[in-house]
Amino acid sequence: EERIGKRINVERVDEALGTAPSKIATGCPFCKVMLSDGLTARQSEKVASESVEVVDVAQLLLSAVKRGENKDTEDAAAASS
Image 1 (cartoon, rainbow, N blue to C red):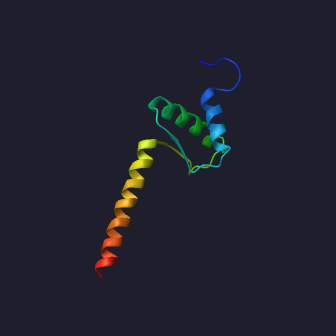
Image 2: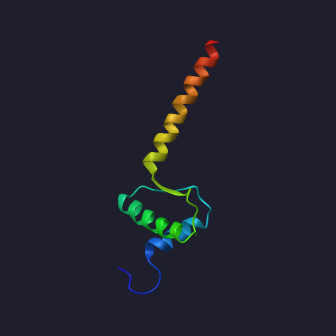
Image 3: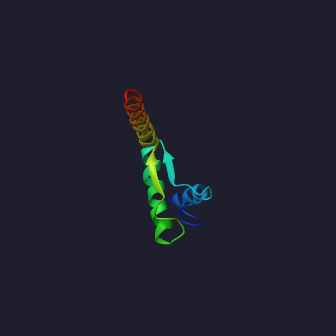
C-alpha cells in the first residue's frame, strides 16, 4: 500500500485516460478491480468521463463475436430476399 505519492490505481488510470478511451480493457481480475477503483475516483473528481468503463478482454471478445453473428444473420436474410 502506498504511503506517499500517487496511488498506483490512479496512476494507471491516468495513463489510460491519456489515450482518450471509451473502454479500458484488462485480462486480470485483480487489475480490473484496481482500474475500476481508480476510474471511479477520477470520475468523482470529474477528470474522467462517466461513459468510460473498465471491461475484461473476454467481454470485448464476446461482444465482437455477437456482432459477427448478427452480421451473418443479416447477410443471410438479405441474400434470401
